[in-house]
Image (cartoon, rainbow, N blue to C red):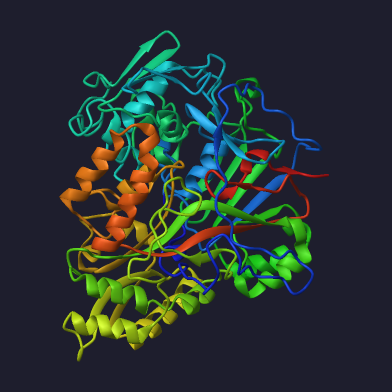
Length: 590
């Protein structure tokens, strides 16, 4: 799952020379605040028996408006559940507007995240070889118009996810089109001119039961079920894209009052949501206002002021310039959240075909300077990355692609460039950066300065649009001219299956480096057919093989996040399953 914030992709991917990841080297506050260290993601467990309604949060009160500031984050381009594959969009919609087969909930006793039922009555039942899964759909969940959600509407939502042409950046491109019946052949209801999904036999409905047929064994269907793409859509033309993405029908505790892409999303209470049908969500606040592309420094000052506006505000980041003060003054209102996320540079594998140049880029990236310019906090929100798979993921191997941890070393970069035939001339790099965010601009200046000192010549182009819209569009004219891109990826669920194939399989949407090796594709296919107990280590071994033998993508940092909560935002906390605030449990205290 990609991070929406473009700055976090290229500019915010730095490291400090710390001790082992997740261990020592933490940053202390110096002003009486908490001493914080980077932490690996916690284990996510399953609880198939969690029943509705969700247990009330002690002390929670109803009413009020919660404003969420998202510094430098453009947010989702549309709200169509089938198209949602970003941390920002999914964390908001899955928590508040759009339900699915399963979902995540925070255990009130332990604080740990658990996979629990949502529209399904449990976590599904597979057959012996995981080629079929059956889910029983609740009969008491409703749309915002009061109509009951039907199994047929859930089946239609699943069918829509097969349409990779209509939803090229949606998660169905990686999972539905890899694992569902008809994968690679069925083009989806829109592209395949099948408006009623009559030509696809991937889902059958029998009363309240839906059975999903697979193209190959898929034991992770219960995890995949937590994506809103695995939820209902209104039948037929009522969910016709792209219009539906601007006018979705909610089935969660909140509905859309207004949406301006890149600016603001306003959600208000959905009075037709039935809490007796929902095992995890609450409806305490009257309204949520999400403000995208916020200015980091201005937001920091608002949060520190404790004025009326700031008291009911949440910020999804705390800037490094103000970190010490925020940590000292706000105490528990500054929440550090671990997540299974890695930041990358993505040199074009076809254009930059010499591995020595790719390794030179890794030594030429001015991690610390870019990192600080982008507003991150050393040892707290970033630590050195050495692999695609992040800390805490089962099967992760600890290795170094060039014998030791990459740091900024311009002399080492020049040596590698000389091996590639660029001893006396700079190597040309063409890339884009997100001009909308001042921190991205500042970080880009540090990147250019450092890389040019290391023997590269940078042609950087400012863009107003989300860089992902350029990087993931193979037909974009500007994208075709680039040879350095980026990607910042979080696991879709805790498995190497959701890290390596989405980033490194030939033709994958977020394979922005355009890496393609048949032997690696074959190995990925082989792993998914292994016994479950062998798969985790196999993904770790493949991660190491790709990094040491091919080095197509440059892991630059493992991520934590800092969230700041106003003094009247109740139950402040993070969502460890997705790396965002835990919106399901927030309220305005009286």
